[in-house]
Image 1: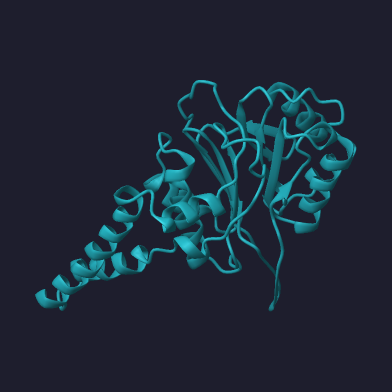
Image 2: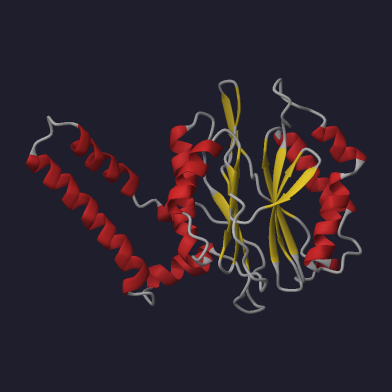
Length: 287
C-alpha cells in the first residue's frame, strides 16, 4: 500500500511518497524514494529520482538496475536521460516486472520518475507497463492515489513555485494517508529545482511532513459540520469559524508576513534541496 506522487511546479518538480509497507497485520517503514546517480563520476550535472507503487522489492530492483546499468555514457541532456529510461523500459529485466499484472490486466508495479538535466530542464514521467508517459501537471499512484488526485485538483496550481507548493503538496499526502488503509508513516519528498541556490548546497535531500501539518483540514471539517447539521447552534458555528480563520491567518502570516523570520528560513533551507532547472516553456495539461 502506497501513496506516491509527483508535481510540476513553475520552477521545477516535487516528487514524494509515504514510508509504510504492510504485509497483513505487520507494518514496517522503508525509504520509497530512490536517488539515482547525479551524473558521470558523481558530478552534479543531472539527477534522477524514482518512486512507485506496487511490489516494493520490484521497485527497489528497478532503481538498482537503473543505477548500475544505465546513464554510464549519458550526456546529461533531458533527451539523453529520457533515452536511458526508455532503454531501461525495453530491457528484459524490466519486461519481467511489467509482465506481472493484476486480475484486471493492470500492471502490479508502476513508477514515477523525475529528471533534472544538465541542460537546465526537468521532466516528470509515469512508467506504466511498457509505456513511458510525460506528465504535464501531476500524477499519483498507489492505494492513496484517488484521494491524492482529488485533493490535488482542488489545491494544485502550476503557477506556484516549489517553495509555495511544497507545504500544500504535503497536505495532499496527509489527506491520502488519513483516508486510506495501509498508507502511512512519514511523507518524504525531493525537489528537482530549476533555479538552484549555489554549488555549495546538496543536490538531494528529503524532508518529512511534520513541520507543515497545519491542522486546517481538521478545523474545516468542524465548519462543514455546522453547515449541514441544523442542530448545531449559532454560537458553536461562530466558535469553529473563529478557530479556522485564526489558524488560516497564522498560516498566511507565516508565508507572506515575515519571510525573513528564523522559522520561515529554517523550514525552507533545511527541508528543500537545490538542483538546477527547467527553462522550457510550460505546456497545458492534457487533462
